[in-house]
Image (cartoon, rainbow, N blue to C red):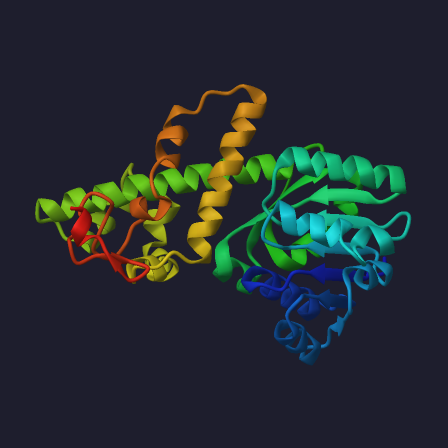
Length: 301
């Protein structure tokens, strides 16, 4: 079976790596982003570029969107020269962004009316997984459409899960991210406590990695320290914003279905980065010298 023509919209850190793997695996790839530089990089590897989302949709069998949030997805689909204007009947639209599951279901229903098939396929694995092509991909939508797209997913990921109807991929991703955020919060407190009583962080982690307190966060401590570097430098960057967004989406999902999540509610009231595992601080042990956006908290203590 001939490989499908794929368009990839959204060339941020994750999207660029995912698109590169599609090129490496021999897919006929067209890319679009509002920034020229990542498109030029993909073109140098053999991809083609589109001038608009509409053009990207028009020239492909499958369109993958990997942008920041619900509002950017709406711009990709409904904005001027959006995907809906260019997508052909029978084509497939895939959302790999982490967004509201109910919004995915609405988009899927609209697509069906237009003869456009739909999958939600958010990913997990961070930049290293995207670079290596070992992402976990969580897919919701029609199973036949999923099977059609399996070779595309396998070019970008290692662990591919079909989870049911439209929105179920996003549902699983939000629960996963919820667990991840809570793991980071608890790990931060544990490290702060260990330091306070004189136990070195690396010694603690070496024990926990082979004990019942282990987690992805524990196993990937070095990566986490790199990811939260901006926070440790006293800044709130894209990672902080992403964590805030995902926690808000998870709480909305719980409210939509009437599920109590009191622990999530507690953590959501904290500055997410203040419970992240930083190099020397947790939200319990800020010193007067700690600054945020360059503003000292000394006057507020």
